[in-house]
Image 1 (cartoon, rainbow, N blue to C red):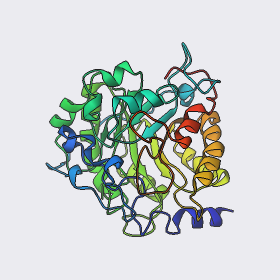
Image 2: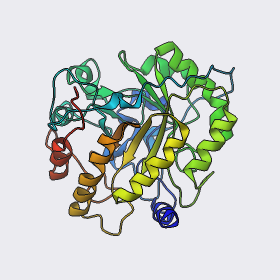
Image 3: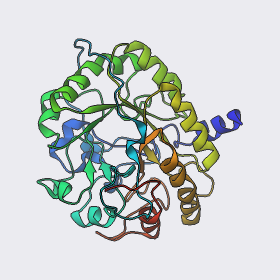
Image 4: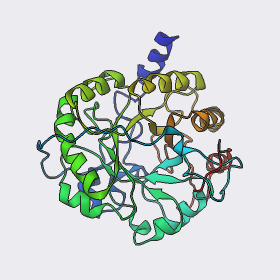
Length: 342
C-alpha cells in the first residue's frame, strides 16, 4: 500500500515537477500589489512556473537563533460546526481556501462555512483591505512565500488581527520558493523575528511531493532535514500540500505528517493528480476528504485549491464575482465536525 501511495503521490502529479497549487504565489515583497501572483490570474500553470507579479526582492540573511516552542495550540482548536453553515459561539473553522484576487462578494459567498483564507502574500487582496476582511469574519493568514524578502516590509504589511504566519511555499521545488532545507533553516530566525514582533504562531515550510526539478522529491525527507538544521527553532505547526484523489491516500499522508508531533495545516488540496479530474470526480473526492479533515483532531486547518484557476480542471469554488460554483456550494454545505464560528 505504501509503495502504491508513493507512486500516486510522486508519479508526475505536479505536472513535470512543478507545483499545481502555486506557480506564482509571489514573495511577500509583492505585498503592495493585488494578490501577489496568486491563482486568480492564471499565474499558476501546469509546469509550476512562477507568475510575474510575485517578484522577489531583498536578501535573506542569517540571524540569531530563536527559542523553540511547540505551543501551537491543541490540534482540536480547528473544530467546526455540525450544520455546514455559520454557527454561533463556536471554535474557529478549520475550513479555508487558497486563493487570491477575491472580491468582497466572493468572500461573503464563502463566509457561511469558510473560516480563513490566504493568497501566498503577507497582505490581503486589495478589495479586502481596510476592514472588509475582518467584517466578513473570514480570517486572513499572511505568508512569507520565498527566501528573498524584506522583513520590515513584511511586518508593515501584515494586517492587525493576524494570528499565524505561513512560511515558504513548496521550498523543495526549484519552480517555487526554491530553498534547500539548510537555506530555509538559515532564514528561519528572520521568520521568528517577524512572528515575535507581530505576536504570531509560525507554520512550517509547506512541502509537497515533487516529480522533478527539486531540492528533495520526498516532503518528509525535506522536513526532516529542515528540522535537523533548525534545531531550537520555533515551528508551531506543520504545513503540507496534497493532490492525490482518494481518501486512503490522504489518510496515509496525514498519518505520516503526525510524526512531527505538531498540528497540521493542509494548505492546498484538491484532485489534481488523478486521471479523472471531472467535476464529478472533484465532488466525489471533496465528499470523502472534507469529513476526514474535519474529524481528524490533528488537522488544525485545511484549504481547498482554488477559487478560480486554469491549472487543474473543475476545481473552482467561485464563478462570477460573489457566485459559488456547484463545487463551491458543496464545499460550503458540507458539515463541520464541531460547531464553529466562521
